[in-house]
Image (tube, rainbow, N blue to C red; front, side, top):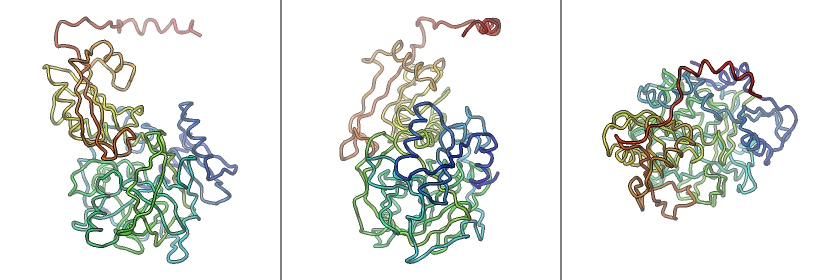
Length: 453
């Protein structure tokens, strides 16, 4: 399987999934406004803009905007995507494939010639503090173990060689920088723009801290990840990255960063206020600039939803019997709510599901457990189960003062949140039967559809 984003985009183009815009568009607001309007119409094409403010670097957006596209990238059926993700990241390839002379070696800018304004960095919404790189995967190593990680962190354009960056997720990158700062050192890092969807998805994998993300990404490809050395420091990055920014997160330096239109669909003023100094820019011949529309867009949320569904499914199936499906709906920003269907064989199992799911992911605020006859991917059915199978005084569990997501505007400054579990399953016996359609008649009545306008 090719690990090159360009090969993947060529296939999408052949399949008619890319819309090419040849007329000029502005960097400020136009692209994100168009994408949000298409969201309202439930249309999710890949949009390719040839001319952005007169520049010659095209901007491509919505590459990650649907589960179908991620499934195509992995070569699986859409309905199997989350489960396949969870399974494949366990099949690690920890020995990466080192490739010399990667395509992004075509152009190298260093020193005083570094100028980020040459890139078509987009200003997305009026609330944003300025232009933001939204698709950049930040790559760094643990200063103690050398274990690598990569992940999405918002990047505010602040100058020709300076970006604001925030580590508010309080996970690996935050920990790596904390260790570097304790040593009085800048954290060497690179930002990769324009990578294959499997690399983007693999960056979200929940794995033990002593393991690197590159091995998990290799599992998604079914082969070792191809990486290449940076030009100015000892760090390997995905070989086929369209653009690579090499630099360092400055020790003991903080500057205001934000606000930014986060995936919660609210302006986020919370930030760790770190500063990324760019020392070199490398890019491919005729590079492609990938932009992710922020706020509550499908491209911003779908990747998180897939990861949550896959990881929670894997974790629940390891600890509980008869788990049927798990869904992290886009209505909850793909992260805050979790719907689980199961074949209940003993009372109390739903409560065990709730405790297990909340315990494995601090982002989740609410878990709803339903019976196997409820489609968790259809929110109307989940709400129906709550309406007809739940008594709040018996089926609702509240957990106050738990660790939450700092980007959730309903949390306090300390990031603590209340969480809730809902058991919307039927008792094991004595409940009214659900009305069902005779499956044998479905084929027979299809002849009558011709009368329906």
